[in-house]
Length: 312
Figure 1 (spheres, helix red, strand yellow):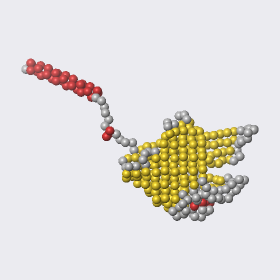
Figure 2: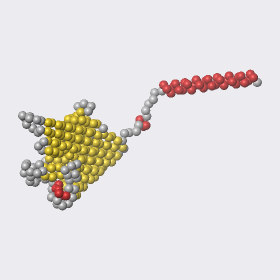
Figure 3: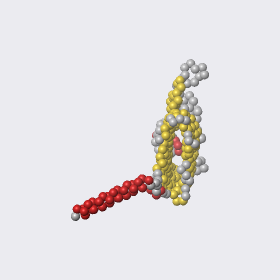
Figure 4: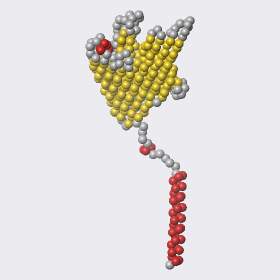
């Protein structure tokens, strides 16, 4: 009996030793095996988000300066461009927000605005063919603060205010988007609300609303072309062209809005920005230098600055 027990213990030891050797070998094999990633396990990135924030500041002071000029001047401007793009299967949803405000303060002229803009665009699309989408678009435009014209030798004249005008545009249409940088949206049936919440401006029928009314609805054709692209490693360009034709009133007089922005990175903090904006609206009357009201004219704005830029 004793010999049988010794034999069983010996066999058990051999089995345990063999099992441990096999386990160790299996672990070594697992450690040395090359790890490969299954493409089917990759979760696509559905949101692409980012923003650019730019601040420009300029200050000057002069005393007994023979060349002349303002005694003191200060210019400050801020610009924000944010975007959030969504793409999953056949669904696409693009959102952009542009905010800008700037002012100039001088000894002789006081404070005056140099820039003021609110522009939100949201566009959803469902792909029906390669690069072609059935889409819906919402666009809201306005400004932050009152705007004035400064006739020669006369008091300033109020020309605009917050949501005076404000434009709310709702548009179903077709969107061609061959890549992430370029987009063309066209709609033959678009509703546009013109809002003039300032009663003094509404009383004179500013921006095409009926005299004494604070809003007006227009129906027409609409198109927008947008482009955003990196220019090398240090520059970014964003541009957009909006066109609207009112079926109910002079459809041949197309309203035009065009924005262009180039932001160039100089160092990790400092940057240079250049903006060129164009607007033509047949219902936006101009104030002449003598203080009288004139007809519509092309509005042009050019802004150049060097300041601090933050990429979010």
